[in-house]
Image (tube, rainbow, N blue to C red; front, side, top):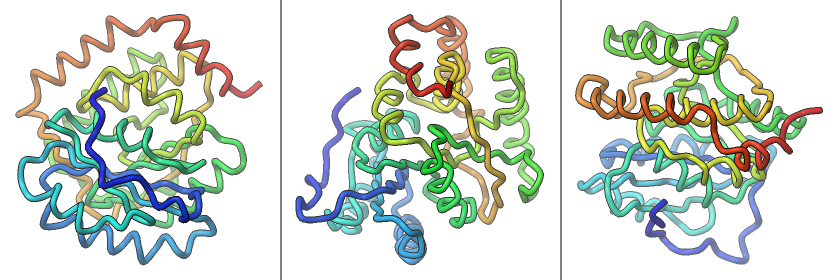
Length: 263
């Protein structure tokens, strides 16, 4: 992974956060300020020291400059990839840079109720190494999606079911939490930079025997990421083929992750 440019190291006098919220950003200069404002208003209500890690995925517009103005080196940090690599690369950079013992990533438009963040922290504190939002669980509230998003979900759900041999994982829900130690091992292993990185990390966890904890989510935004399935179709198919070929990962990767599996 290419090292991202950073806003600078965190202030050594600042407390080490328990909670890190990683937000991949792509061409969201006009909207990310409002999202950061919402998080800064909500996170003090969580019983944990916190930080926000914003990662610009080589947007090529004013997004990186806006992130720099939002960063304060204590509560909010900004990273910038040197080129557009994909959401997976941005998330991986943020998750490996984060310091929290609970690390969550979510989309820049904050499509899900922020209260779910505290529930993720509680699950990780209780010993869950990986907590996935799941839009198909009872208690979830999901507004109608566009035809394109439904088509994408059907494609990914079918592919994931074949790849994993299980159909209970909502891999494309844009809210996931991990323990810090697991994140430190897992995210440097990712090879898929784009749309299907969630599928790859799910595959790695499943093959290593790590139990996935699921949470219902409530959709409050558009649930529309910067990914456009038609425009990125060839890349998505390439990533799918890459995952299929690499579904039997190297033994050393499974061994490194297996220590996080529950006995």
